[in-house]
Image (cartoon, rainbow, N blue to C red; front, side):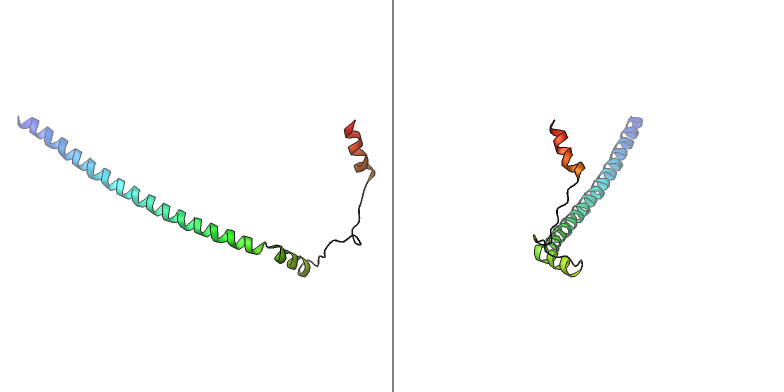
Length: 98
């Protein structure tokens, strides 16, 4: 009878230790999930901020201003437009239609 009690006591102690270990691991994993969710929220906010900044930087007026000031570009007009054609490109569509 005492031998059975000893086996049962060892089984209960092993079960209790396993339960404590499992709860500890569960709490640790929950803390990691919570931290990862917080990091994800921070990244999402940063992404939204960068998207707003990107839209602000790419306004047509700003792009045109930079093109004129930094690249010395000017608007296209019929007076300065040149059309270039070559025999190879002119005959390519005709040969493709046959």
